[in-house]
Length: 168
Image (cartoon, rainbow, N blue to C red; front, side):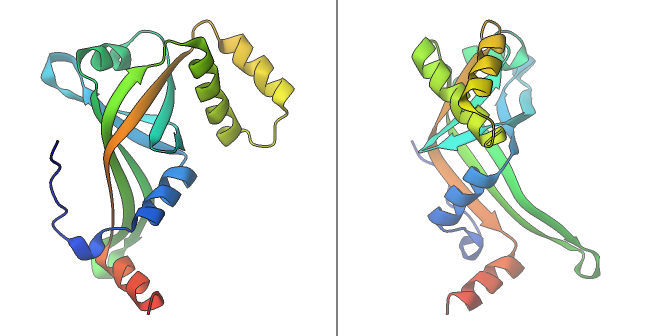
């Protein structure tokens, strides 16, 4: 599978920074092949864990229909979006992951995935409270797993220059 090279290579983020952004981000936009050939891009919470991204979902709806139609997806996380009116620009930093997405069918895998999500969004909660919340939502809960095939990160040239200065 070939993915295109980034045009502005100087603005490419190093792999560690991409990983950090995926870990600290709280939401992103999942893009799927939607109804009637239209792209379907939906804002969604997620958790990143070692080359995979996990999402929760209802068991039916536009998202599930799209995934059943085509497993390929992309997921974008915006890490920085600072508007600089004086320069008519934005100091941005973002990551886009491309991969294959699937509905997790196995109950053990599903529980492990929802626990990762719960720990990310309620890190100070007790395991007992977490389990109670998960058990309450278990029946209608659907978990999705995206295996990343390719990921890129990019930042505004101004931020790239700052990074290059700090590395020297």
